[in-house]
Length: 171
Image 1 (tube, rainbow, N blue to C red):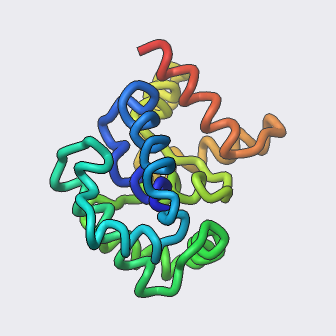
Image 2: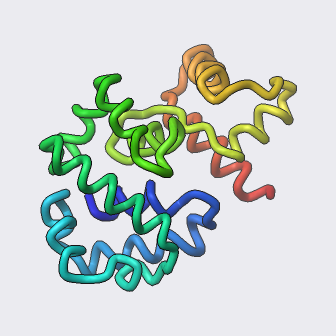
Image 3: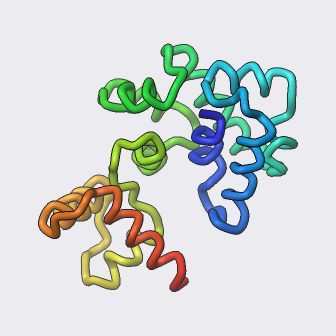
């Protein structure tokens, strides 16, 4: 769960493969007790998360701490807990109260725990623009991708990931 929380907290405007992924893998190896929210929370109570991640960005560290505190306060401790918890709109709204967490972060977090959602980012927006889809608000563009996935017979998260991988290599 520590890696999941750090993934969603640290990834905005970050090269995932070159910068974030190696740090997440290192965190998983060096903080094995962070598999649960409680384990992660107790670990960063005594150690510096920015140092462990080798990522000195105060706002992103604060976001990771805030998400962790919110999940712990709501009894979310494992990936399965988070998967179920994100299935409730009220819980998603509570998560939105964390500074730095928007609808894309919540959808991305859902993907990280197996919910298969479309998390619209700059790559998905660019792909849609290349396809002639007008600039739409987040929720509307997400629906366009979801409907395209259904039309094409694809899993929503798989379509999102395929577009992301394609566009991230072309920019």
